[in-house]
Each structure stands twice: as C-alpha cells, then as structure tokens.
Length: 380
Image (cartoon, rainbow, N blue to C red; front, side, top):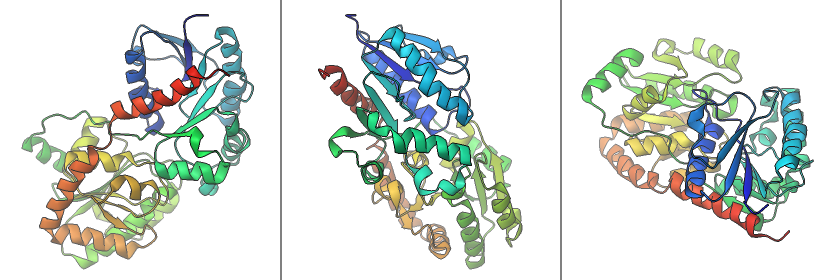
C-alpha cells in the first residue's frame, strides 16, 4: 500500500476518567494526527469511544473487544485482538501509548513506558497484575523497535532494568493539562469555603496509593500543626487505588484529623482552582516517572514541596523545596518554611513559572513523532 498507516493503542482515552496515560494519549495524538494529514491513523479502542477523541479526518476508530480492564482480558486484547487486526491493515508502525506491545505482532512497534513502579513496588499490585506486567515488560519489551518515556529518570530506569540501548529510547516529557483562564477572587472565596472551611490549606493532588507517600504527608502535616499555631487544612484530592485502610488508620490517629479533608476525585476546573489557591502543593512520592501536578502548580503560581528523588527531582529543577520523602520532619519543616517566609514563597513562584515553561505538549508531540519517523524511514 502506498499510504502510510499507523495503528495506535488509545484504550486509555475514556471521557471523564482519564488519568496520566489518558491525558498523555490525548495531548500527544491530537497534535500528531492534525499535523500529519498525509498519514492514516487507526485508533484502537477497547470499548465505545467518544467522538471528541477523533481529532481529524485521517483517523479511523476501531473497537477491539472485549473491554480490556482485567489482567486476563488485557493479555488477550494485546496478544490476540491487536495482532489479528494489525494483520488486516498491515501498518507501517504500531504505537502503544501504555507500553503494552504485542509479541505476536510482526510489525514495527513503538512503546511508551511511563514508569517502572511495578518493578520497584510490586507489593502494591495484585498477583495477576504483577504477572501481567512481568509478561509484557520484563519478558518482551525488547520486541519494541523504539521506546519513548517521560523523563530522563525513567530512561535511566529502563536502561537499568531492561538493558535497552540508550540509542533506542526517546525522552518525551509530559506537560500540563490545565485549561488556563482568568480566575476571580470570588472563585477563590467560593472554592475555599466549599472544601477548606474558608481556611488556608496545603494540597495533595494525585491518585491515592502507597508509593505516593500520602501517609507521610499526613504525619508531616500533624508535625507541622504542632510547630505552628494555624488553622491550616490539608486537602487530599484524588481517588483511592490501594492502601485505603492504612491511610485512614493514620488519619484517625492524627491529633489534627478534623483538619484533614479528602475530596475524592474532582473535575478539572475545581482541581485547578484548589491548586491555584493552595499555600503549596505537596507531592513527595517515593517513586514517580514524571509528576504532572508539579508542573501544573508551578504554571498557576503555586509553590511546590516535592521529593529530592526520582523524576520529581529532575522536573522541579531549582523551583521547589525538595525533601527526603522518607523523612516526615523534613516535609513538616518545608511546610513551616512556606508558612513563615513570604519572600521565599515569591521566589519559588517566580522560578516555578519559568520552570513550567520548559514543558510543552507541542514540544513533546514533536519529540515522539521524531521517534516514530525513525521507524517509518527504516528499511527493515
């Protein structure tokens, strides 16, 4: 066939339920498909799709059943449904945005691997999910012709654990998903009244999972409240993925449990407003492949307290207060610094605005497309 075709795994494009991989897929593929009208893209969904994800006329949406949400079905979808369809269209490249390539597919494959937390923290996964990741990554990520990942840190991890040559890995940073707009003082009062009892607050925004160190944040907040006479709250925004019982036990043992507020998962607008008016964002994870909330907070002019390890150390540059995520005293002291040093806060805000400008979906889409083009132009 003369027309070049690319099949793309976009099963994380789910309206109103998108997490990190979903947003990455949305932002990257919207730009790539619209900028390359001469290439035909097949978007592979595992359920009914929303037309908002069909970004341009050169996209053909395909539903491959069954919905791949259970480990067994994810295996079946990737190892049978995907290669069977690829054999029908014979694409030039198969692009998998969640890293799950197909060992049975006989076409050039580009895998985007976002992080390796399943190797570093396997105890936080069910047995079946561990087996799934072991099969698709540990056993046959080597079948990918090229790999993209979201930070230099993740690139180093892929080289370390999988012994992939550096020349085969592209760093394609994530970026902010915020829909920036003018925000009024009235909205500030409304959002603080609704979620923080009209008080100032520190903010955590992400999925709630043990590797995110939410228990460490709660313990540090307890220590901060004992150091400073304040009515500050701690807002935790996100949905529970793992370890809810342990986290709630820590909350119940806190002297300041009435000041700890779980909002659940919020829509994009309310999350943005809470981020905008927080005293600081707290993202002190044990392990992150990127850490989008750090960039979003900086973009909004909100100071950031983050880990001095993994990708968080890399993406925050010199624009955040960095702490050892294992040390709750350090986290508490960072909160105290934010509370007591307004001039330092101004410096962090200014540096953060500059740091956030380094990350752009336009740049990232170009970087990923450059990697894909290397496969399109290769002779074998």
